[in-house]
Image 1: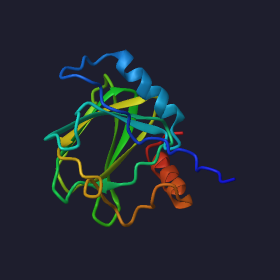
Image 2 (image 1 turned 60 degrees about the horizontal axis):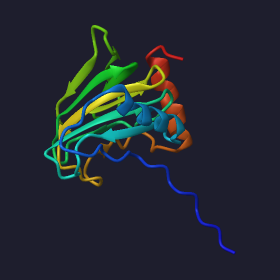
Image 3 (image 1 turned 120 degrees about the horizontal axis):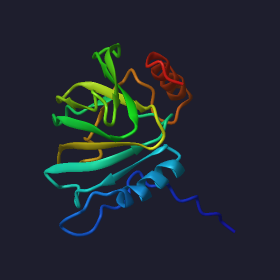
Length: 176
């Protein structure tokens, strides 16, 4: 008797159906629940219907202690916009060598509530509150292999080194 491998938890939920989507709390409830259950502690709720869409629009629901490996969008170059819908994050900008250049605490409804990132800038963020919701936009199309240029100096997701690096980012932000 063979045992089937456990199904993989999705990285993203399916986009809402139809040409117009009303953005409301009930739309986000499923994404919040999925992020709480995800081994990665986050989930994407795309609003664009196809990966080929010229403008990629999504909610990124992130729980504390989710590791988003530092990356940039350089190949092809893409700007990115992150707006806090709910919760709080520490956003980090890095040099090419991996030194933290600057970091900000961003909070929904606060004086600093988002960032606009030019192409080629290494960055990441960590959620500071449960159920942090980030509205994210960037140009498409989405090509999984080319979407992110991961920083060679940052540990890969799922490794013991990633947990140590994540703790470092939280300490730097003065959180937890």
